Length: 324
Image (cartoon, rainbow, N blue to C red; front, side, top):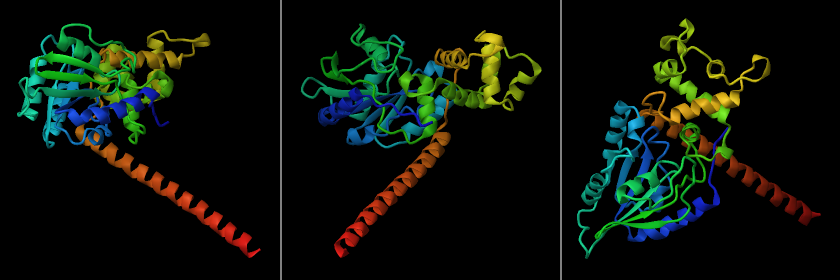
C-alpha cells in the first residue's frame, strides 16, 4: 500500500513558503534523526530557490549515534549546506543554531541587515517544541499528533534574528514506498492515511534485521527461537503475533488483536523504548530513492502512453465519422 497524506493546509503552506522565501537568508529544515532521508522534503529545495540550508537532525537522543554521524557527514558534504544534531528538549540549542545560520550567511547580522530564517519540517518532527525551547516560552502549540501547527508564525529570537515558523508539510506524492512506511511509523502521517498493522509489520521487518536485541529485551522474547541471532528468520506476522500475546492483546479464544499489537509496536518505537534506532542509512535511502524514481518514471511513461493511445483512438474515430 502506498502511503500518501497531503491535507489542505499543506497546500497553503506550500504557497506561503514560495512567497516567504523571497526575503529569507537561511532555510532550516528540521529532520527526524531516526529517518533523515525519508523526513527530508524533496519539494523544499525547489520551493526555497536554493537558499543556504541548515539540516537539523532532531530527536538525536532517540537515534542510533553511529548512523547519525553518517547522516551528518552526508549532509555536510552537500553544497551550501550544514547539518547539526539536536534534541529539541535541550535547554540551550539557540546558540548552536544561530552560529550555524551565520556561518551559512556571514553577510547578515546587525539591525541594518537582520538574519531572516525560515524553519520547515514534516509534521510531528518536534518543530514547535524546538521553537518553544528557543524562545523560552510557549510560542507554538505542541502535541504528539501530526498537523498541530496550521498557521505561519514570525518569532523574534534576537533584535537582529527573525524566525518564521511554518506548519509541518509533507509532499503531494511520496515516490519512495519505504519512506511512506518510515514516516507513518514515526508519527508524521495522519492515522487515517495508513494501515497500522501493515506499517508495524514493515517496521518489525527492519528492526529484526538491524536491532533485534532491542526487540528481545523490550518484549521479553527470551525463548531460544527468539534469541537476537535467530529473530531474523522469524516471519514478521509471527513476530507481531508473539508480541501481541506477550502484551496481552488478545481477543476471544486466544486470538491476538493484531491492531492492538501494531499500536503497541509503534508506540514503543516512537517512545524510544526499543533503544536508539535509525531506520535508514544514507546508502539504503539512496537505493530506495533510485528504485522509487525509476518506478515513478515507468508509471508516468505508461500513463503518457495510455493518454496517447486514447488520443489516437479519438482521432481515428473522428476520421471514420468524416469518411462516413
